[in-house]
Each structure stands twice: as C-alpha cells, then as structure tokens.
Image (cartoon, rainbow, N blue to C red; front, side):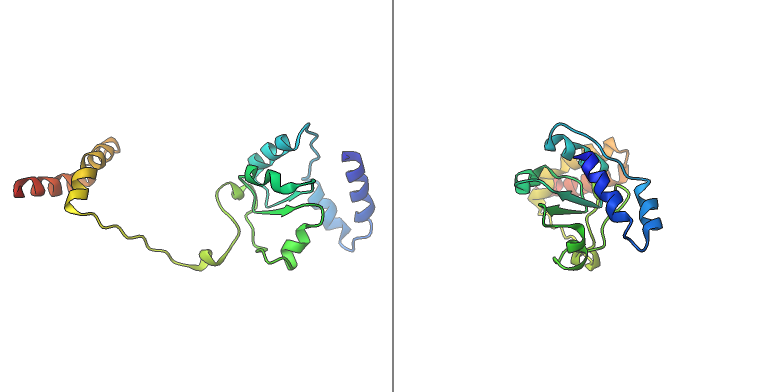
Length: 158
C-alpha cells in the first residue's frame, strides 16, 4: 500500500500548477509501515498531526484512541479539504506537534473566562491543612500563612 500511495502521489503531483511547492512540502513527509492500526495511532499521537485522516473501515472504533490531533477526518470519503472548506470544522489548526496541548481555534478561543471560588468557614477548615502543606512544599510561605491566619481566627472564635 505504501508503494501504491507513493505512485499515486507522484502521478497526481505532475498535474498541480504549484508542483514545486507541493514537492517541497513532501520533502518532510514519511511513509511508515506498521503492523496494526493501533500502532499507527500510537505513532500519530506522538507526532500530534495538524490533520489526521483515518482512512480505514469503521474509523469510529478507533476514535477514542486519538489523543493528539488538530482535526480528525473519519473514513475514506472525508478528505482534509472537506474540513478546510465545507464540513463545518475549523481550518485554523495547531501545527508542529502543538496538537499535544491545543486544539483548533473555536469560539472559546475568543471568549474570556473567569473562575470563581467561594469557601465557607467550614470549608477552609476542611481544606486548610492540605493547602498549607502544599504551599509549604512549594516554599510559598505567604500562601500558607494566608490560610493559617484564617484558620487561627476561626479557632479563636470557637
């Protein structure tokens, strides 16, 4: 299948008006033979591709194995160009392995989020010792003291 794929690439590339650019891009491409789809997915997860095409029968059975990819194209009739122009997913995807820690641009990319916390007197007494221990382990004494002082104040009120 590797030789058939490479032959098809060579055949199709000759008809591209920007053949020189495509050939330059292919200089960084590799064909890797593996024994199983599972092994291919392991390699893909390490590489963290911008685009991953699961051109296999029943691609959905491998869906949960995908951990690192910008966008996944499921099956033989879902080419990358569908994602780029028509199927509704985003075309702005993480490159250079950044899919290990980031997904494609989406609405949340343009949304500012704020987190809120509210701890009751009982809650700080339950969490306090753990917070102090972790803060001390990080040598953040002022963080530990911020909790200790509150806990001492509560103890003195009892």
